[in-house]
Length: 300
Picture (cartoon, rainbow, N blue to C red):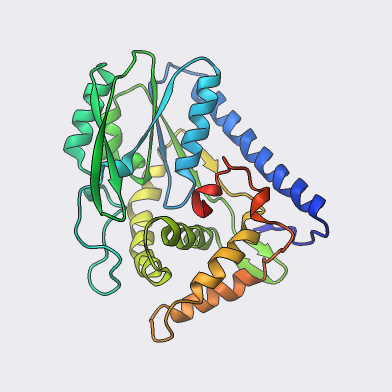
């Protein structure tokens, strides 16, 4: 259990606190890169983790650090290899699958990786969650020395990693600890849920009620498939920033309050909102968050 310092009294203290949290995360990135490149040459980095663990931004941070060493690094989002689907944002009925390996077009991904590692041009798909399908393809010409970061929930599944060959390094991201502020506690999985409530509302056209509707299925897949396969990873990276509950309270609480009174998720929403409200710290504001922070992945 991590105790969060909620006693911030000045703007200067708040800015220093945010800066310290960001510096600590940057140090984790540097330590990860040292591990990745300390052994045999790596061609592919498989960056996996459960939903809202910060994979997308961390992938970008990894590529920037790699490029500073003189190599070219390219991020490939496994989300872009989702199969097209028709239904979205529906609370009643079967939940859409964006987490299991069955959601991925493995045939296309296999062909894509083979061509990429052979140095042949590829068509990079782009999946639009609001349209629930691929909206375009961009041509990409690989270079023999390129390093590819394949990021996504499914980057931990054997059906996906077998496509990467032998020259790949697996990194698994997650929120490592539960947190406490005074008498209020939020566990590590709830932190990811709160990140997802905000992100899905802002960027995926999903209501908080719909996100709560999906959550049980998401967690079941994590327990059955993601975490068991994560035991085989080469390295684990903690994406949590100590200041983020302060801002999550500002973004997520109003969203949770919109869950309809007659919804079967209303009690859960009220419970989360009540505990999260205890983490409010008005002096920590969005302008203090660097534009390239992993937390920007959820708030924009």
